[in-house]
Image (cartoon, rainbow, N blue to C red; front, side, top):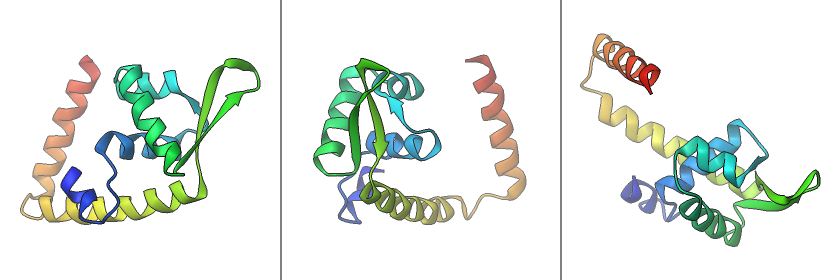
Length: 119
């Protein structure tokens, strides 16, 4: 995925894409919630968030209810970027899956769900 996003000139790492995607679904989140959702260590998430904050993609604000936490949200620029990257990803996914039948896709997803239930 690095090459996929780099080809767009965005230089977004996969974990940054996942953070931004997560924030489109649930926002605001604190860094611990992001780390736990992605099953990544806090240090790696902090580095990714620092970079995204520096690029104006996300905003980090102190939680008014608990000043020990930072709440993370997408900026308008971040929303535009994630919309663009999702379209790039969907085109790539379509190309990767073009030779796989609908029945094979359904079977694969069923197996993945079974594995997820065991985790």
